Image 1 (tube, rainbow, N blue to C red):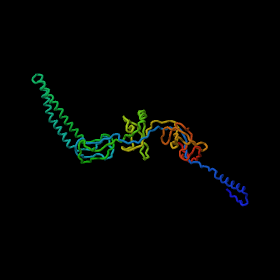
Image 2 (tube, helix red, strand yellow):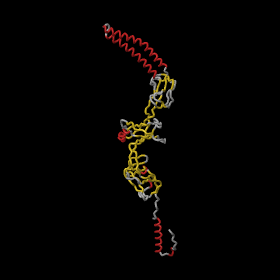
Image 3 (cartoon, rainbow, N blue to C red):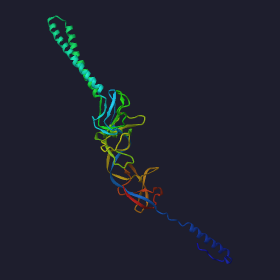
Amino acid sequence: MQRLRVNILFLRPSAFICLILVILAGCQKEKETPKVKAPAPVTVASVVRKNVPVELRAIGNVEAYATVAVKSMVSGTITRVHFREGEDVAKGALLFTIDPRPFEAAVAQARADLARDAATARNAAEQARRYQALLQEGIVTREQYDQMQATADSLAASHRAAVDSARLQLDYCYIHAPMAGRTGGLLVHAGNLVKANDSPSLVTVNQVSPLYVSFSLPEKELAVIKARMGGKLPVQATIPNSGLPPERGVITFLDNGVDQATGTIRVKGSFPNRQRRLWPGQFVNLVITLDVQKDATVVSTRAIQTGQQGEFVYLVRKDATVEVRQVTTGAAADGLTVIVKGLNPGDTVVTDGQLRLVPGGKIAVRQEKRA
């Protein structure tokens, strides 16, 4: 407003009042001058068509395919350990040797008893033949003959069984791996005395290739899992914060009942684990691929907003303004969401900076990304 330099002493009262009104009108005009609002900086992305996998996500726990606690079947002293703890062993590999000398002596004794009693058995068999002849002549009764024949049969069988038992006890002195796997911590060393079937075990062997990953899914997914298990439903396991590619497997086990306390069903996936990335007891992130939705209309999940009327996006117009567009969403995967209704391929939506937007407001595109 310019200052008016007027000598008000020489103005008439009516002229003075007009001057005051002109000055006030100029001030009011300055106050009513609107300020232009700057465009809101935003990031945008295009709506595209893509094949989108329909997935379930869960957290699972890695389990050994099989676990065997190796124990001794006989009592004795460990004379040698044939492996290093934490080492891979093949099926049938020798793990421990228990002092075999007492058992070798028992085998020798059983053989001696067998040889000694073989003569007795032969004599009993000869007598049984004689009694058979006497039975035919009517000299002995049928009962006497049967008793002699039973004695001969029992002598021959019992001593063979004693030798077999002694040999079996000797075999138990050499403890072999029941399966191929990885040994755990060694709980006994050479010189330790062990007892038959005693606890703790000598060592634990875990089969880690292949192995299982166990996890739980909500009860509502049961029908979908059951329908697709016959087709080798794929599952991927990713180790958190490792940067390693996911391990691939298939669903092989569905529990026979729903846990009523949690409303979940227990599921297992089998993984070849050839590179030994997965380890028993480890927690992993799982992705179960149920289906693939082909040529779906997708947009960045960051564009989806939620309001009182449901989900919506800010659609970018050609004049660099935005409008609110209500949408119906479907499955989501890898940062993308399927749009069932509300958008078309080629549309542009705001993915970042929505807090500063109003319907019809101007925008300044800071960065454009493609879904």
